[in-house]
Structures are given as C-alpha cells and as structure tokens.
Image 1 (cartoon, rainbow, N blue to C red):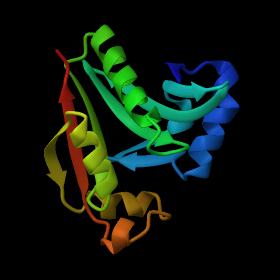
Image 2 (cartoon, rainbow, N blue to C red; image 1 turned 45 degrees about the horizontal axis):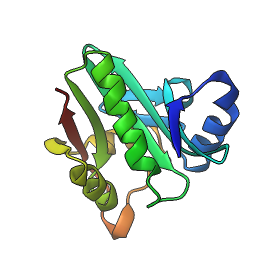
Image 3 (cartoon, rainbow, N blue to C red; image 1 turned 90 degrees about the vertical axis):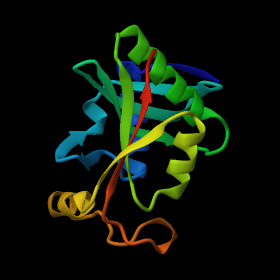
Length: 157
C-alpha cells in the first residue's frame, strides 16, 4: 500500500468515494465543508485508491475532515492517519484533530488505539448540524440516538 497526496488525476476517484459514503458535504462544529474541494491524501493498492483522508490545515492545526477506507481493517485508515500526522509535522502544526459523533463507537476505538485523546464534547452539535444537512439521521450506529460531537486530538511533537 502506498499513501500520497491526491492529485488532479485522482479527483474522480476521490469524489466517487466521498459521494458513495455520503461524506461529500460535511457539517461539523458549525462549519460546512465540501470535502471534495479539500486537500486529500489517498491510499492506493495495485493502482486502485482504497482510502481517502481530507483535511483542513489552519492556524497551526490539521483538522481531519473525513477519513474513509474502502475496505476496512486492511490498514488504509491507519496509513492515512499516519500520513496526515506527517503532513501536520511538516507544516509545523501543533496538533491533529477531528470530530466524530457520539454513536461512532468503531471510530472512537480506532482513533484512541492510535494515540488520539478525547478532549471535548459538544452536546447537541449534531442536532444543530441536522438543521443545515437534513440527511443526518436521528439514530446512528448501533441504534444510538445521534446528538453530540466528540473532539479527539493528537498532539504533534
């Protein structure tokens, strides 16, 4: 597997992955992103893109806006997160951070096992985001009511 910065030749594949998982428009912490327009890293295997991470680098912080592996549990997510940390380090960023939701137990496990720490909870933030992006469901993974944003971070040294 190889991870690299996405180029213009990858636009269709990145767009396709983001669209297929419903992650093209992302509403978090009161901000709406078109993930297809953000800088991206791609993981590829045998010439096929198997994962995409989009990010926003601002004010010495790298926010992971989306992370999607086409085939889970094959290392693409870990490789993409490691590459994002390297981008943050190269840019002199002091932290890498992201938002997930209170129902996303698999993501919480994934990120915490890779050194990220839970640093904030925004009660009702998903309810507010649902006013902007009406397709956000009321019930999330594992039948858990979907209401809150959880912020995780990895300090970059």
